[in-house]
Image 1: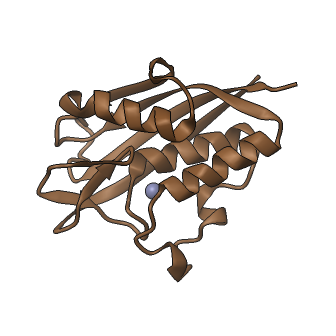
Image 2 (image 1 turned 30 degrees about the vertical axis):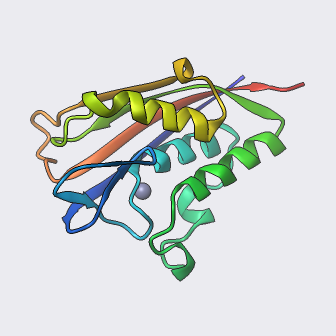
Amino acid sequence: MRIGYGWDSHEFKSGIPLTIGGVTLAHDKGLGGHSDGDVLLHAITDALLGAIAGPDIGSLFPPSDPQWKGADSAVFLREALKRVTAAGYELVNLDSTLVLAAPKIGPHAAAIRRHVAELCGIAGDCVGIKAKTPEGMGTDNTAIAHVTVLLQSKK
Ligand SMILES: [Zn+2]
């Protein structure tokens, strides 16, 4: 078995859509960054790559490369899953914690869980989606995601 850990953060910016876990949430700000800024999919991608000791998301998809401008982050996740398969592993489950002041994730957690499970090809009850507000951290204009994954050998 292999364990992987991923972390990511993006700053909130006005006038762009907010996409978390591939789900667009109604909010007055979105997450900036070169791709669609999907902080959760980026952390999942890095956790998967870390579990197989692969290159990180920034090495595979450099922000300096114009082809990733506004990119759908599902593309990054699919590449990581492809590498996991090529390494002889499959994803068992993943757990995540989002840290953001707003919007509230609770009402959207089921939709995010469903979408992430579908993208990853695992059951919904194998995807943990938790959220906390950044008490005392001074990061109210930032969304942060922590993710752990467990892989098992297919052999
Ligand atoms: Zn990111």
